[in-house]
Image (cartoon, rainbow, N blue to C red; front, top):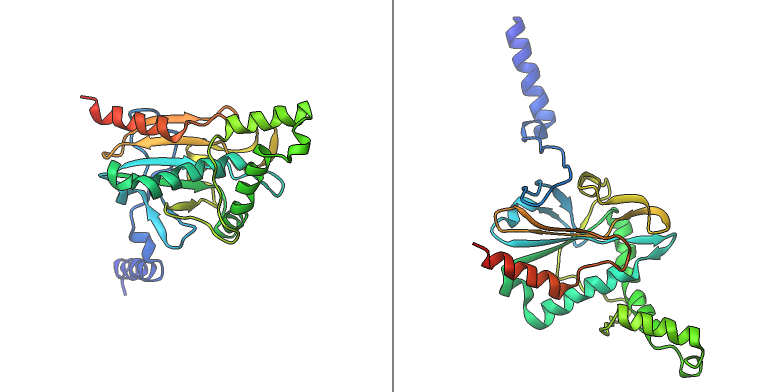
Length: 241
């Protein structure tokens, strides 16, 4: 067998053993600016299977990076309230169909850790309700009342989920390797006073052509654009020449 035959046989063997070698390599993900294309990516979902971002072309996409853990064994309550804003809008207003929209959430953990977040979800919402409604006999305390009023401003709507339930109408991506979170520059090991692996809460709006038209990276945990603001932004995008 001559050298060319040996080389050809070796290439065929590599392709048979490693068929992914023939797949085109996706470019490294890097931070994006407004007006640039959102890099393509594929990530597993909490619900099972994978999401290919390229498959969402033709729809407006709201890409929400949830903080996740805010401390050891302590999930970010603001994230869960933010998530429920979208859930309620989908339930009551058929949000995605009306706006030709997909909403995608990203956690910087693998599926096992993301499941822990989902399991804790009902209790997290109950915490918020309890903060807003302390026992009547405690409300005379000025400090308790001050906290109550602060929480009522921060969380004006009432959301409750039965124990053992988790509403999941939207894809929840599990980025355990932090390929997307680190690539876009929204992952941190210390942020807002907490030393733990977490996302910096962020929102991107990507138009149907795949171009980033809105980008918001929070400065603190309560600094989040609300859903009404995001929908107003999307409608302004559609009206732009």
